[in-house]
Image (cartoon, rainbow, N blue to C red):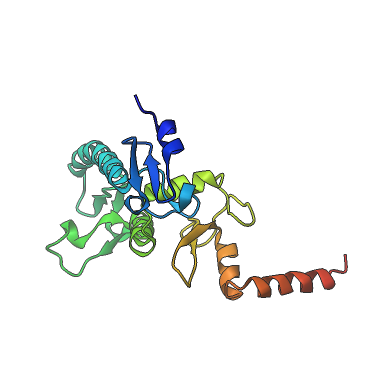
Length: 206
């Protein structure tokens, strides 16, 4: 029986082994990931999508059942968030323009959960990263900023920022808000950053 390790040894420059389906596939069959082997994600795209669907189905089935039970306990001025399953006042939900689309004229998710989901949706749309991709990348970094090493993301959303190349668009790593903003202020220019470091060292009176 061929193992994943056997396939790795048979890899050519243009292909890669998938640890899930244990098949040798073209690099085009894998999502890009600058921190992964051959700059590609571990599982192939087909397996990754299947894993995400399975995970979502498992979460949906259990959480939906709890959500439906909690809905019976709602009062006219409260609503249960479908994500965190907490009973909250209606003011803690965003209102919707089309009142027929959502119960009680407010969003299905509370403001806190909606903001978190917005960050997740933005990752997928803008960077092509699923939440699973993001969590795997953060784990490889030791749950810390790739530059300063802090475990505190900072910022309003309290989530590590996805640093990407503004020229080519590829994802580089996950950074805290301060480091990500700092790179932006220095226009992602290594020369400017080196000059800034030299400036600080030259004016260090300590």
